[in-house]
Image (cartoon, rainbow, N blue to C red; front, top):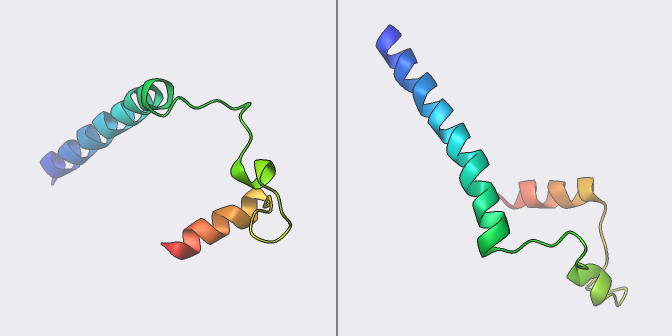
Amino acid sequence: MAATTLVIVIGLAIYALFYMTHGKYIEKNVAKVDPKRETPAKRLYDGVDYVPANKYVLYGHHFASI
């Protein structure tokens, strides 16, 4: 039982480490995220299809889609 717990804890620690380090690498070098860049909802706003949403509503839509 203790060995299983140890394996799970080590696995979660490795996962968290790579989540933080590799995620930042992908954000900077692959996706090239720019927080100043406008979203399509703001850039293409037409009042019908492209409408900025509240972040909590948007999160709910993403969660419901899963």
